[in-house]
Length: 386
Ligand SMILES: *Cc1c(COP(=O)(O)O)cnc(C)c1O
Image (cartoon, rainbow, N blue to C red):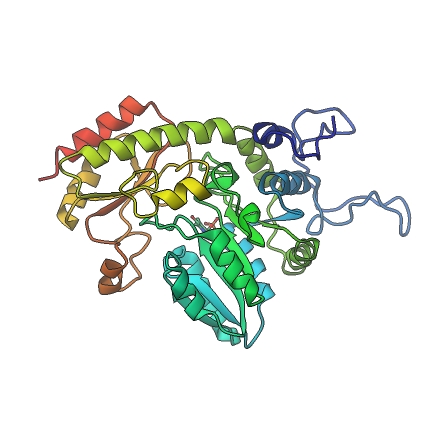
């Protein structure tokens, strides 16, 4: 069997890049915990020279991710932010970047507090409105950075349409696919040039590793990202590469369960008299439900809902027992958070309200526990809300 050829998605999750170890036949790719490789003679090596440059465990993960996202290759980094940092080396002084105004907070911080110091200009726009993106694009726009759905209000952007707009102006399109994983959304097939992930979330899936990856459609971009990875050095460790490879083997079964629980909980919350509003692309009431059906193969497990006031959110969050209060997402356990005081606290209050990050908004990353247990926990906590 030629495992490098793309097969069914579940098969690829388990087999792509996961060749049996050539020296022992070990079915799981070993954790190559080594810093260097003995060379047979001057100029004679087995293709491995130094472990910042290449590591077999990391290479296995990179091959796997390239197949799953349909790219020419992938590079794995020490975190999702390290992947974004590496991708951002595609822009230079004088260039301009268009970015979603609801981008991940760490991305916003990196762009505005660090990259902006190097003479790069940014426009943060509502990417749900293609006309706003079009208006923001300038002759010197080199990069369009997208997220869909966005955190925490679950707004979508039309990746195919925006890619066309950006390409007309010669800009590279990057999609942060962390919330979906390639199981739900394939940005490269929709027209994007580079996909990135925080592998910390659904790909790792077990809340036990921090990592990131960039997968590119063109060989040139893969080569450049590899050059940056080796030059700046923010590589994913062998152990973390192994944990993500291991997590991805069960991506499909986890995502199916995440999705089933996510849909059921979104519908349950939408019917609940104490819940004012539910943001979930799978609900027909979501303003971009039609786009979600076109662009995604499912709706996922990320939901936010409004309890009307800070006090209501506070009493609800004090009562949940099975759902854990915490930042992060995408793990097998259900995590719940309060964006206005946690992930989005640095945004001024007025701006937060304008963006829909209201004081009563609660975000939930639905895990794969028994649905009945999750609903019972949410219901008993909602009972505490006035
Ligand atoms: C978590 C996250 C990141 C950053 O990833 P780290 O692994 O924490 O560095 C980027 N984008 C999104 C959408 C995320 O959820």
